[in-house]
Image (cartoon, rainbow, N blue to C red; front, side, top):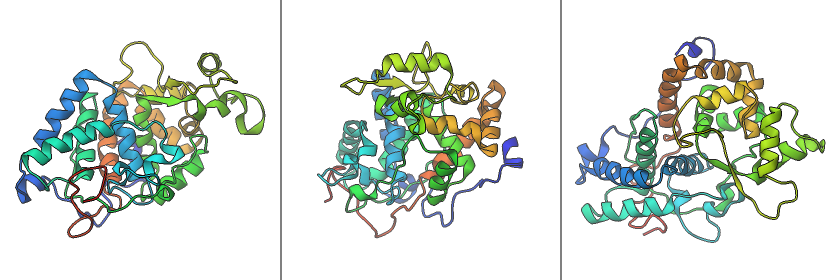
Length: 319
């Protein structure tokens, strides 16, 4: 990728890589695990294209918590991560449960919920147009969850704050700009953008960097004194709102990003350069390749392997 020539970024997985390529096929009694998962995801996707955005957000919520990629987001409980304010509106739990039921029927006690989430997200993203990137497996599930483990920042932070957050997860500027590209699909709640619409940085005015036509459109969908919290598309456009494209970066360049952190990519030299490379049609393949690597790097954060953790029989509770 040409952007790697001048943007300081990693192009490998973080050491030590504890996971194994085709772990289930080579090392377990469930060699067809990935095939079972892919089949179930395809059935979900054929009925509901939004499953891709749901899985992408669910996986990010798991991997970017303080605990890393350990399936803690899937655990139930009053003090669970899924009840954190930042995780409002998370979906996809039922679909992960259904995949787990199939795997427990075919090969009980072998495939972790954490690997299911990583593999299912890859397969759903591929159906939407992303590359079918390699997912190294062999993760085990954590034994506990805590709402305190959720440190996901506000979507209104600056690009500098965003980069500091990603760097705290052993990810870099290219990972940040690439992973945020998942916002090319899906929705967000009005509560996450109302500050941009009505009280940017406490000014009691709208964000001056937002495209005026987009501002009017979003203010109409997110009234200032609304008693509800409706959702808006992250990339409002005609046609398929759940397709993996480079439109996200084009919208950043034209000041039409919905979330504040997305628009902030325009103001960092490195992130602006990445957006300029990924935005044109000629840069889409660069985006796809970068997405494949960054998803693999995110999926490697603080994984449990070997004798750590467990293989849950039910993704919502420990054994």
